[in-house]
Structures are given as structure tokens and as C-alpha cells.
Image (cartoon, rainbow, N blue to C red):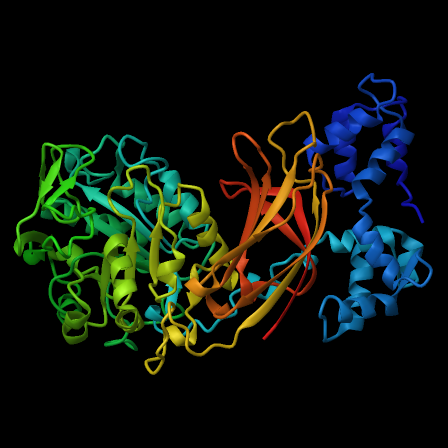
Length: 639
């Protein structure tokens, strides 16, 4: 049965013919999702007179090409008794056998017919045409990502240290770390993506106004108060759960007081400035801290002392903080040369932002066991409650002395070394204390490390450069799709419970999942060259998780077809720790000389995958939706 066009569509052809732009608009009016590049090519093929204008018959041909998908016809025919119509019972059968719909399948079938069947008499008869079935299969309801994971469904009443927390590094930068611009957009875009821990690099500015920029570089400067005003505006737009402001504080006590004043004036009641009554000696939960802003910085004294000072005048009151500057063995900020205590420096004469150690003539010199004194304004110190920045010394030191509200920041180099040599101790540490991992200083191009290795050992804040696209940010975006994109994901029980002996590199006990993915086809895959749809396309499926689960498989190349390539290839993966696994689909165009070209990708947690026939939406390198470009797959897994 063919779709009956509404009268207004006939009206579009009153003048006889329509051009490409009108064709695109008409398709959109009919709810046909289509890529302009592909429509342009199909329009050209169907414009018989080559005048740039088509008749209604030619439009019907274009419509059929865009909506006809042989793989959908095959599924429809398998469940239709006459290959023309699906009865309601046929649809129920399809939903239970293929889509794993076990409850209320009859009610769901009725709702699907009412929502997606465009032909009125078919809809009234509680039946479905191929047209309606195609629309349903192309809908959000048939996407790979589970609808249940689109909302906050996890228990949000555990202490903060029990969650993975979406975290960014150098949030103010939108390109590289040396001469790139600082921009409020860095904060806005991170918050819109659900980021819950933002880094603010603060320095003394002119006219007694603290500024935010990457110290000792040529990056541009932002006013601190402007930054926090932007954060205030967007903080809870995507998520209700707490935002942590990780202050990289280089300001004098006088300007620290101004920062404290700016924070209180801007955030008001949202700013957490005292212990919560119910949490005097444990970290509160994300639920208890909803709509709250937490300051992460050095802190003087105890929470009890802070509470007793509440409401007192702190102007001009400054305390001194003394800390040990790391020796050569512990220093995580730079890569170590084996033969000397000399490090390469990016910018010549300057001072290291983490250690305060002087860098001269392109090298950095360290002396053993050096200490430094920092002056901290009491007004700013007292705004630090549950996120006190404490330098990491050793796991043993933390076990003996670290307080529940003290957090560590560890550079990726040191963290990687510790995770390889002392994974069990590292996991024991992250069970108790919020641990932030940040990129090494030599990543002047703002490149990122693979965050998976640190999620595997329970690190809560794995901070990435959100402005830098690529695999690490694909994994970050994919992982934090879960739990409603709230920026907080409850860690698996084996990374939270003290009796667990989990080691990601040595899995002794597991309940593996056998995941099977049949990659059926591609739909209007993206193209880099607008003149053709003749891409030679292939798909790579990758698993990221514990080392034993890391693997990738790929399809054959389909030559000269990016519009509707058909693979029909099946891949099987044995996944030992599904709770930590991410699945990434990558679409590439084969290039024999310059190498393969990235076309799009989609990453999601394994346990957020629907079973059955599913559509996989694709995203660009920058994380933008490439709709309607997608993959069509059949997924099933058993444990």
C-alpha cells in the first residue's frame, strides 16, 4: 500500500516542477529524515531533463529511494502474513521474539501503531503498513541506547567517593595550552555536556580583579568573576547534581579574598560553605548536594573550626600552608630522564604551576625534599568543605593520615605507574578518597590520555581536555551518557566494597557476557565530498574495558556506497567485566594512499545496550550529531 500524499503536497507542484531546495523542504514536511548531500545526488540522478527541476512523478521516485530499505522489508515480510500488512498480533510477535519486549507487549504494539502508522484506515484497523513499520524502526524507540539509561536511575544516596564524576582539565581553554584563547565557551560547553568538575586556573590580575588563564603562557585572560557568572548560569542546566570548582590557585591573599567574595555573591545559597548537619564526618551523597557548588582548594584547619567561624569577619586574615615539593621520584608533572634530574620545559624560563619549582633556560631542576609556603586567605579557605585539595604522598600515608574530605590530584604518569605496580592499593585508596587524574604537562597540544585505564581502578575524577576531540573524549562522552547524562555514575560494587579483591589486570572471578553484534547495514553515511555518495565504507567495533576485554573487529569494505551499504556480518565478543566495558562503533572510508578517513562514531556502555534490531546514531569527531547517518544492527548478549 502506498503512502497517500496530503493535498498540500500536490499544491507544491502547481507550477509544474520544483527545485532541489523545495524537494528537501518537502521531504522534511513528510518527516523523511535525509542528508542534503545524499538528496542532492539522488535528485540529480532523477532529474531526467537535467534542468535542476523535477516533476511530482520524479519526486515520488526520490521518496521511494529514500524510504525503501531492503533489510526492513525482509524483517517485515518475515512477520507479515500477506507481505502487505502487519496485524497487531504479528507486531506483538516481532516485539517479543526480536526486540526482547517481555512486558505489556500488546499495549506497546497498539501504541506503536497509533504513533507511527501514517495511513488512517490501516491505523484504525490496528494494523501496520511497511511505511509505518519503517518509521517505527527508524525511531528513537529502536535506538541502541536503552531508554531507561536516559534518565537518572541509579542510587544517588551513596557518598561522593562511590561515583565516577565527569571532570574536565583546563576548562577555560578551547584549543592548545600555549597560545590558544581562553574562552567562557569552554565552561559553558563542558557544563552542557554534563561535566561536574571544572578547573579554574586563577592568577592576580590588574585593578584587583583575579584572572583565569594558563599561567606563564600566551593564552588570553578571562576575569574570574565573569567565569563564575557563566558557570552559575549553566551549572544545573543539564544535571541537578553538584558542581565542583577545582581551583588552581596562584593568587595573593588579597585577591583570594576577592575570589571568595565573588563566589559568595554569585552563587549565594548554592555555594556550600558549611558542613551538612547529617554529614559531619563522611562525604555526602550527590542527592544531598543537589544544586550545590563545591570549592576544591587548599584548606587551613578543620571543618569544625570552619563551622565555628561562620558569620565572623575574615577580612585580612591569612594563614600559611607549608607543603613538601615532590622529589624527583614522585614528581608527576614532567617526564623523567633516567640519567639526570633535568626535565624538558615547554617555554623556557618560568615556574611550574603545580610545584612552584623554577624552570631556567629550557630545563627544570629539582632538589630533594624541598618545602614551600603558601599564603591562603581564610575567607577562601573556609569555603572549602568536602573537597579539600591534599597533595598525594603515598598510599600508606593516605591510609594513616588522610581525612575523609581530602582529595588527591595525581598526574597521569605517576598514576599509570602506580596502577601497574600497585593496583590493589590504588583501588583501596579510591574506595575511600576522591582521586583526580590529570594530563601530564608535556601535553602542550591539549591532547588526552585514555581515561579507561583510570576508571578501571576506581578513580572518580578522570580529567580530560574537553576541547580536544578524539578517542578519549569519545569514551568520556559515551560513558557519561549513562544515568541520564547527570555526570555521576555509581561505580560497580567491586570498586566500592572493602572486601573486594578486584584487579583489572588479573581477573580471577568473573561472570562474562557473550556479546554478539550482527552489523546489517549503513544508512546515509556521512561523506566528506559533497559531489558523490561513492565512499568505500567499513565499520570497526571496539571494546574498551579491563585489559583482557580490549579488542576490535572490523567489517569488509563496501565499495562505492555510502548511501545504503549492506554488510550482514556477525561479530562475537567475550567480555569478562561488562560493568566497565564501553562499545565503540567507528565508520571509516577506505583510503589506499592517505589511510582511512574517519566518518563517524558512537560509543556507549555495554550495559546500556538494547537487544534486538537497533539503530546506531553517528557523531562527528567534534561530538556533533550526524543524523540521519546511522548503522543498523542486531544485538544480543547472554551472561
